Length: 170
Image 1: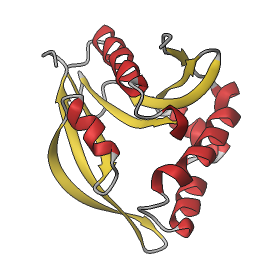
Image 2 (image 1 turned 180 degrees about the vertical axis):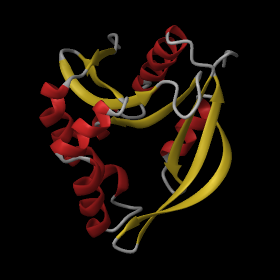
Image 3 (image 1 turned 45 degrees about the vertical axis):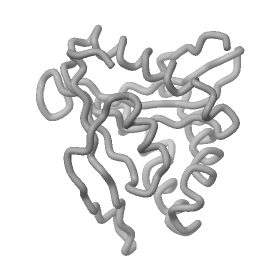
Image 4 (image 1 turned 90 degrees about the horizontal axis):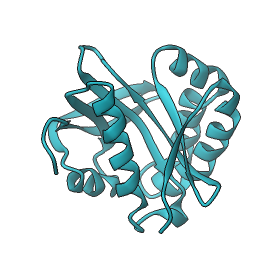
């Protein structure tokens, strides 16, 4: 497998991020959420205006590339709520690239970046029914709490909050 690259994204990449989300989300969440909720959440979190606001509010977006092809994206925020504590807001790979070790390589690059930014811990939310939880388990995350987050229109995000200490190795 060739190397995976994380390329810092800018506002100019927002249309590509939106397109990737619209391609990946139905596969990722189709067995967990209704099509109506998926559409609602894409409209809530992935409009060009919303993505720009997320960038302006401190989320660092990266395009994930392999073989000169963009295969996914992620967003991470350093010093989230408190200094030294990061948050992984998004990590999505195209379905065809999953279960091939690529996610593990991406995560290694994310950890390297976070350590360079002097982050001590990282947290994320993952849907309680999302098979990706097992990926985060393998990366060394542990569940710290269970939350239900109302997002409007009667929809809930039923998540685990997961955390990882970045000062220890896997």
